[in-house]
Length: 114
Length: 116
Image 1 (cartoon, rainbow over the protein chains, first blue to last red):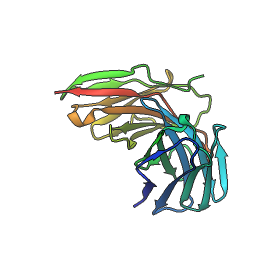
Image 2: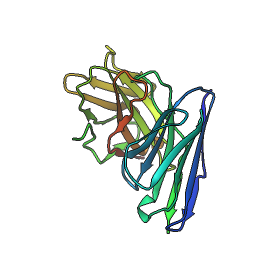
Image 3: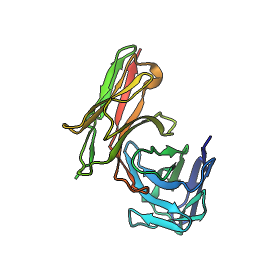
Image 4: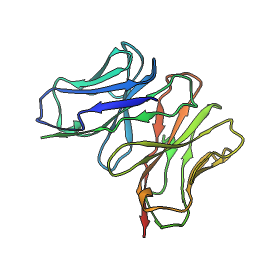
């Protein structure tokens, strides 16, 4: 069966520090991968999605970036964190066969910027 | 414009009663899928149920059913026999089109509290 791992679970970082969040999927090949951010008490905001290695689409211009160095690995990064980057970050995957496929989520990372 | 609308920010239901969470959507694409997710306080997003735009029958999954009214563009989630563990945020979501990379659009969510 397919599983998704996301780490770390919690992170406290100072303003201006770098960031690296990692997500890996097991049990499937060539998944579509997604990064979402959720502010406290709000809905999900799509940040990036990827349909293959090295292919990244950005939804929101910001100081975050994403990379997909391997088929089942998705990384969210920042060179300098802002206070507004605080939130709950979720990685998700789906199979690439159109609108019938749901997304499956990792357990998320709670990021606090001080 | 909002593509997914959930008009109930918060709902209360008595344990063992049924509850309906509203969701309306907007799309001009004939091919789309509608999803409901549950997010407990721990944060993980749990996929509950799916309805495709071409499906003739309403989807059901255990105590969850989806009341799909295509002409009204609504896809309400019905939870029967509510349990304390059903207390959570519930998100309605939509995925449009035939292409494999289409992103999923989420609604703002409804917070459900089950009262003993």
